[in-house]
Length: 237
Image 1 (cartoon, rainbow, N blue to C red):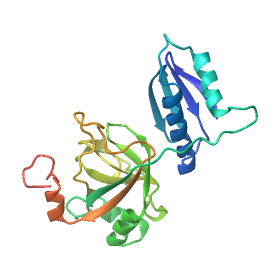
Image 2 (image 1 turned 45 degrees about the vertical axis):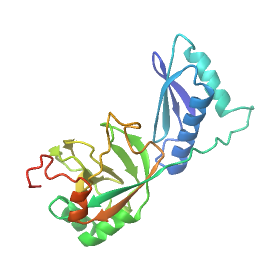
Image 3 (image 1 turned 120 degrees about the horizontal axis):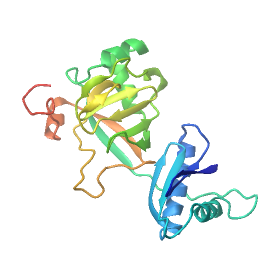
């Protein structure tokens, strides 16, 4: 691990630079320790893949002082690597409608994988995914890792508009678009669940380190769960 300055009031702790649930568990464990042990000087923390961004109050602590305290959390005794307590992960199940009218790129993925469309759907559901990061938009969780058989590169030309709730795959990750936005991931279904609500606490149903599974639903259940048609309620997809 190494610690670097990321801004006037931020430090970044870098872990082993690879996508791994084990590495992410250490990131989340340090995040928990920082929040508990350094609460009086910490403003916010952001965990992601293999790093932890720490924002602090510059009127209470300096970069050097905070670096030293973080190092003490990581290395309580010289030469002794700590076993940080793992943070308990929540498990979330998201419903997905894989109907052909919303699974815009399912056929492309199936052809790329040399599988049937039903096999792609089954493989997508069989995995339990880890939330590795949240962004580029609030509620957009980068979930890994998809079965290598259905991994597919991003689209060469992104769509100008991806509908709210679109479930998609890019490389070895999958995600649900929480709102209409541009996007270059291959769409295989749609999720009716609201993934970001500024008026709720918490605003999102998951956090970095949580686990997510998908459950197939039919059209009737999708609508009953609040699924939208083309995002405007006009009766079309």
